[in-house]
Amino acid sequence: MRTYIALFRGINVGGKNALPMKELVAILDDLGAQHIKTYIQSGNAVFASREQDIPRLSNKIRAEVKQRRGFEPHILVLQIEDLQRAIQNNPFPEAENEPATLHAGFLISAPKNPNLEALARYQRDSERFRLINRVFYLHAPEGVGRSKLAANAERLLGEPMTDRNWRTVCVLWKMAQELK
Image (tube, rainbow, N blue to C red; front, side, top):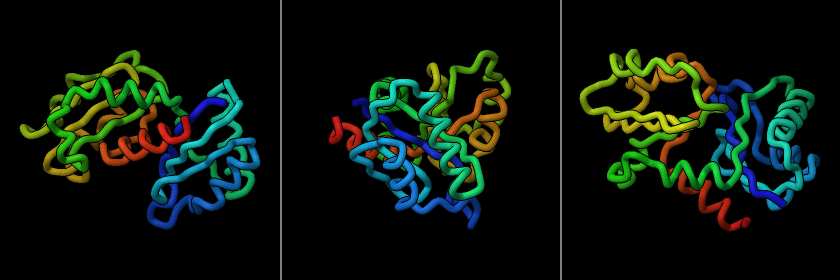
């Protein structure tokens, strides 16, 4: 059994793409997942599965959500090692004391031609960012909601991204460790 972390993007936001966490648990259970735990309504799940092919696992989950709820969510499935690496590689450890200001944007694959110069033009003086492999780290002390850098990151990186604040990253890590 492997431990996985599924990050859903754009569900249960503003009344769109509703997927109650109880139903997500049922979907994962029907797909053979075990020890399923969810965290907050925005779509975070930690579970164990015998499935070894991550793209196939992601596609199965997406197809099942489409069949039951009528929409196909963007899902990024991480292995526990991916999350561990993201935590270890955090270039802004001093920002961990204010976890709502530190974000990790998880990408499906490492961007081939990220436009980091354009990203820097959107950067406020108080903001810092760094792309390390498949994780876009952003420290935004004035808030991500007001950050033009955050708003343009995915487009300028050129890869789909799903973002989590550091508090959520740490909670998911703890949940994954408990399953291991």
